[in-house]
Image 1 (spheres, rainbow, N blue to C red):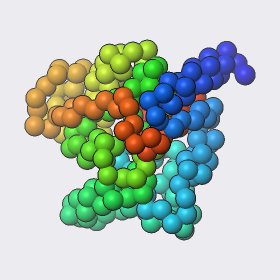
Image 2: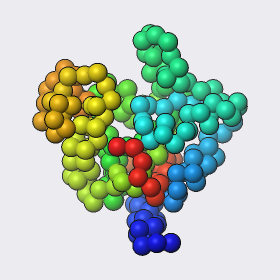
Image 3: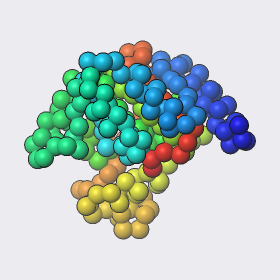
Image 4: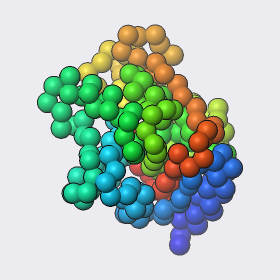
Length: 212
C-alpha cells in the first residue's frame, strides 16, 4: 500500500469502531469495486430496494447491478415517466426492505450528516425502510461534526445545486449563503448520531473519493 492507502485503511478501521459504538454496522472497503460487491452481499434475494438521489450510488453502477440480479424488487425512480410515479416511489421507499444512500459528510467519530431539499431522503434514513445502507467515499470524512456540517453546506450543497434547474444563490456563485430560497437544497439538515434499532443502519466506507 502507498502512504495514502495506509492512512485511509487506518482511518477506516478507527471509524468502524466508532460507528459500531453508535450501533451502526460498518465495513471498510479500499476500492469502489470491493464496495459494490459488499453492498450486493448485504442485500438478500427477494428484497425490495430503492435509493435516494445519490450520485455516488449511480456512479458506482449499483442501480444497474441490482436490476441485473433479477432476484430483487427494484424501485427505480430514474425510470419513472411522470412526477406522479416518482412520488409513488418516494412513498413506497418507506416500506422497502433496503434503502441505499450516500452522505454529504461524516465525522471521524461516526456522526453522519445529510442535507436535503425535499426531505424524502432524510425521512427514509430516519424511519421506514427495514435497513439503510450508506456508501460513503473517504473524501466525505471530516474531523468533527462541525466540520462535517460545514462540508455539507459549503461543498456538497453548492455542487448538488448545479445538478438541478433551481434558483439559489449557491448555484450562482458556488458559495453557501445560508439562504431561505424556495428552491433551497438545504431545507432539511439531518444528523444521524445513533442507530435506534441496532443494525438498521449500515455504513460501507470506501477508500476512494466518491460523489460530492
